[in-house]
Image (cartoon, rainbow over all chains, first blue to last red; front, side):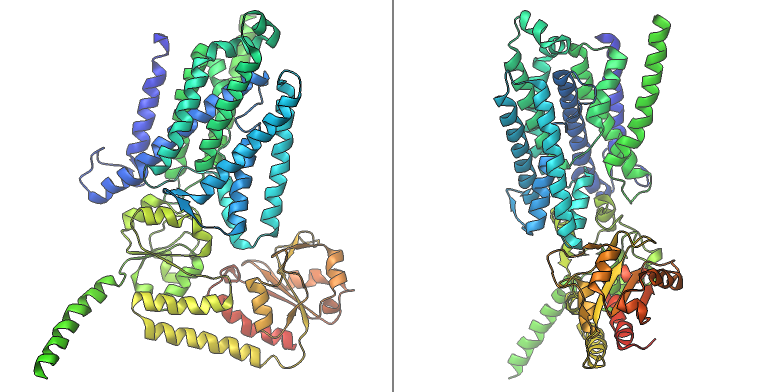
Amino acid sequence: MLKHAWLPIVAVITVAGAVALGPRGAMSSLMPDDPIEARILSEVRIPRVTLGFLAGAALATAGMAFQALFRNALATPYTLGVSAGASLGAAIYVHLGITASLAGIPGYSFAALGGALLAIALVYAVARVTYGFSSSTLLLAGVAISFLFTSVILAIQYIGDVTTSFRIGRWLLGGLEVVGFLPVIHVLPFAVVGIAILLAISRDLDLLVVGEESAASRGVSVTTVKKLIFAAASLMVGGVVATCGPIGFVGLVVPHIGRLVLGPKHRTLAPFSVLAGGTFLVACDAVGRTVVAPIEIPVGIITALIGGPFFLAMLVQGHTRQRLRG
Amino acid sequence: MRRLLLIALVWAAAWTPTAAQDMPRRIVSLAPSVTEVLYEAGAGSRVVGVTSYCLFPREVLALPKVGGYLTPSYEALVALQPDLVVTLAEHADVEPKIRALGIPILRLDHRSLDGIVRSIEQVGERCGTAPRAKQAADALRQTLAGAKRSAGGARPRVLICFGRAEDFRRLTAAAPGTIHDDLITQAGGVNVLASPAIAYPTLSAEGIMRLDPDVVIEFSSGGTDAAALRRQWNRLDSVRAVRNGRVYVFTGEFLSVPGPRFARVAETIARSIRGER
């Protein structure tokens, strides 16, 4: 494990860099004398970087778990319709023109969480009626519900006026720009509980990847583990999406990079996903925030722009390495 | 009596500075139409930040930017130390974050011509330039009323549209209830679309032929060739408006900014609807 000590170091440097990097160059220090810089740091910057790390860690870990659960390299945190559900909740909320908040939580976060829970419940209900909580049924139900919900969102955007369309469009871009620590506190329990559960069952994930029969033969209660993964990962993603909107690519790419670098064992892959997912999203957000400051590029665009080519390069490299070995 | 006068004087002296303190001195605008209204209402000199989409009046180009219209940078906002941020209805999800920073908000409604006119007065009242704002608002009201008066009795059926491909695919029209419909009505026309169910529906060439409007008003963003756009309509020569040469194309970036300049277009559109070039 010690040979992977570079990862936490990179994580700490990235986070510190993201906190210190101001639109007009580096902030003088992490304890600035200038009261305005201090305010920016404490009320905007640190909450945002913290949220980014939590969201990235949660999405990458959930993506890793779903890829193992479905034995499918293309699975993402959103494959089961959680993001479409959350987005539909937010879209309906905007369309109805409600403005409300409860205990500092904006109404659309509640609506989005409700939508995510609805999607999770629907997928679960469909999968339950099939024998043994089948992974393929789960996957197909998730994809079908994603498509259904997405078309309803498009319909709402189409019939709505300019204001509605703009607000829904903005939501669909996702983003980490927050003010104050309240949104961080909303995401925290979802992320911590979800990540803890998935870390705890990382050994079972290895057995699931090999095959459900062999997992069962080694004494793993396959259906229980599958339900646990489904619940932990879905709820965690729902909690993140409700606050940050759908941020793509992190959950797909980070676990795969981990597999290429560290191999497929979840005992190391799971902590890697937590650390690298958080670091990656924080770094992408820092780029989106600074390149054309003060204009901000939504982080979802940056994750794909940086992650895509990087991932392709890793794939090619991994392939040549394998060929050399063979 | 003298004592009363003294009390009144002291009271006035104590009151005036507070009122002056309440008056915003550092205003940030979160939309191009808001920026326009701030200048129209006489508060322009106190605007310290605008969005990257704000291009009018020209002097705002030199002002610090706070980012995009729905994606302001909260860091840039804090750095500008505003004592008032002026928003629109679109900013419903942005406002709680501004409020969390302790910055007061004034929300304007630019979803109708009336809303634009009233917003000038709202800004005037909040920023202590009420007389000047009232004057500007009244002038705009008169322009709109003039457009309506000159319209006359016959009300042609008008299609108002924008954002289409050369071959008329993905043409977006404005239905009743939108600010564009407001413009038609103010200029003496009647919207050829009857249902307000979809605010900005997409029409096909076939749909336009069926609607058969008397007049077509097309808005296009800046930089496009109005004459070329008008010529493209000749393909739909079965449409009454095309046959009678009643297709009018308007270009200019301000057509997508629902501010005072947009409202004043009503005058030009009224002339088109009356059949004057």
